[in-house]
Length: 274
Image 1: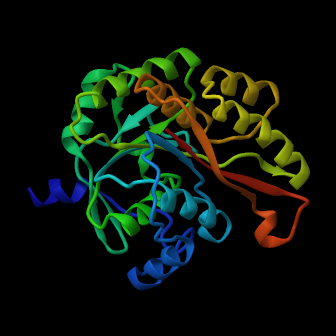
Image 2 (image 1 turned 180 degrees about the horizontal axis):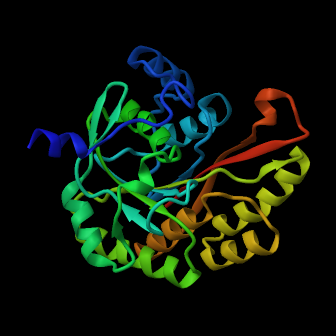
C-alpha cells in the first residue's frame, strides 16, 4: 500500500529552475509578482504563460491577481515532450511542490474521464512537463488549499478540440462550484520583438473575438509558434459552451522587456474569458 501511494505522487520537474525551489523563496517570489486587488473578475477561463518566472511571471501574476480563484481547477497544458497520450490526464494522487503535496480533484477527474473517449489516463505525459507545474504556486498564493485536474494535450484536430471542450463543459454544468479552466501557453518563440508582437496580436485578436476556429487557422497560416494553442482552443470551446460572452487581454509582454535583447524573444499573453 505504501509503494502504491508513493507512486501516485508526481514530483516536481523544474523547481529551482523555472521558479525557486524552497518554500520561503518561492513564496517571496510569487508575492512580488502578484497583488491583492479588491475587485476580481469572475472568469470561466484564463490563458497564462509558463516560462521561467523571471520572464513571464509578471504576466501570470497579473492574471491570477485579477480573477477569482476557486477551490478547484482544470489545467490544460501543451505536451512539450511528446511523451504519452494526446489527451493525458492524471486522475488520482497529487503533485509534490516545495511547500507540500497538491491533491488532484479525483472526483472531477473521474467524471471527465467518463465524459470523453478522447481522454486517457496517462501519468507519463506529466512527468517532465513544466508548463502545468509552474501554475500551481500562483494558485496557492490566493487559495492555500486547492485541488486541480492536470490534462496535457498533444496534436488535436479542431474537431477534437471542440469535442473535448464541449465534453468538459458538460461535466462542469453539474458542478455546484465551477472550477476555473486554465490554458497554459506562451506565444511566439524566438523571433524579433517586432515580429513576435505582430504575430501575437493576430492570435490575441482571435481570442478576444472568442473565435477558436479562427485562432486555429491563424496560428497555422501565420506560422505562430504558440505552444499552448490547443489548450487555449479547448478552453475557449468549453467556456463558450458554458455561456462565455467576452474575453479580455490583461497583460502582454515579451522576454525582451526583461532581458533587453529584442533580437530573439518569446511572447507572453495573459487573458481572461468571461
